[in-house]
Length: 233
Image (spheres, rainbow, N blue to C red):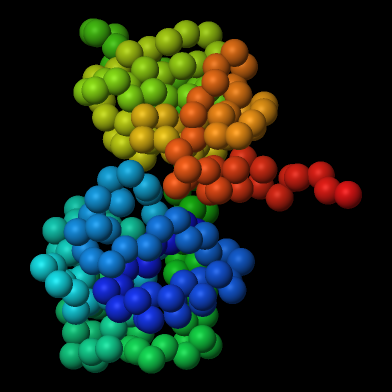
């Protein structure tokens, strides 16, 4: 599960990060110091789970959750017990009070993982989508998509057989593709990990196309592409 930690206390953030790194089914994709940073990060980086502090400057974790229309799963991490009821009213997965013992953190992570698995199994992802091009609706199979390229208010979809220019944002269309197969490698590109045939430096090779990777996303992208299939000595 892709997760993001948000906490304005450096010591607490470091501790939670250490816990996340010990759990093999959690993949840390970002850390934030406040809700505004988290708001910006979520527009670029989809996440399955947030570890979210409540008392933060400018905007509390509770107020941030209230304004999300489709929030990821949330585990609250806070020094204050009095917000527990409000947290559960917002359907948080768990509510952890600092200082957080590792065994309690693991219990919350397992609870989130079980919910994540049940949701994935009960609602299988479709293997295609329809896009509107001019006055036509065109069916595009996921496996035929090589990559997506943002072009201002449009996205160019490159498939194995055609190019389709769609009036949509990159974030919007990426959210409709399976996260297990597609990954954002740059602010302007999302790639099909199954279509990558070579990685060299900060460049992905997909057939005749060469797609750049940003430095901040490179490690995650390579991990997703390799997916434990790297042949070693």
